[in-house]
Image 1 (cartoon, helix red, strand yellow):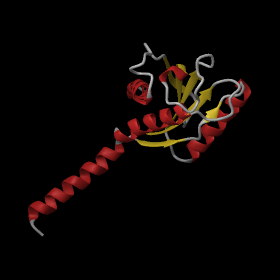
Image 2 (image 1 turned 135 degrees about the vertical axis):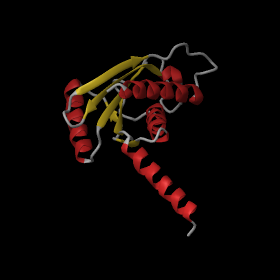
Image 3 (image 1 turned 45 degrees about the horizontal axis):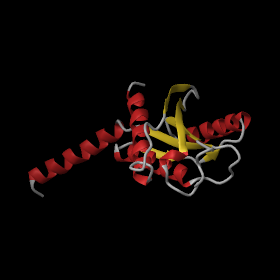
Image 4 (image 1 turned 60 degrees about the horizontal axis):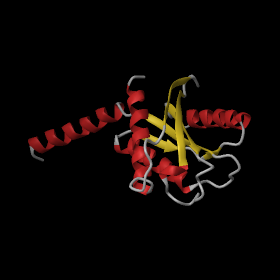
Amino acid sequence: MNRWVKFLISGLFAFFCVSGAFAKSLSIQIIQNNPGQEKIWATSYLFEQNITDYFFDAGDIVSSSPIWISASEDKNKSSLRASLDENRQGGMEVLVRVELFYDVKNSSNPDGLLLNNIKNVEWKAYALDTGREIFKGKAEPERVDSKNNNELGLSQFAGYIAYKINTQMKFQ
């Protein structure tokens, strides 16, 4: 084999080994907060997919925990403990819980991918080695109109949330 080919292959191998050393490993869990609902809405699935894709495309090791429907504060705490334990055992570093608060007055179409289904979004990240909260944030959709009250507008908002989370993770 040519000396330059060996050098190129060795360089590529080293690059991939080193770049993997800097990847974050995180788990995303979506919390659906819309009282009285027992069905997971399409909006929640789209948020999960967009946020997971954002981190995967950035080169991070990412998994997702099942979407949780918020019922009560006690059950939410129990779900958090279970998620922390599960992801710690799975070797992840960070758990990010993204809670979608639905506008139950204006959300008449749970199967629709509509931005006006979302009132606001809050997130909290936990270091899995300690179980402590390391950062949190909150955002609301800015102006919802006929141009962005669709799947694209919802995807863009989910991407914005992922960007905010990623920005906060860089400083941890």
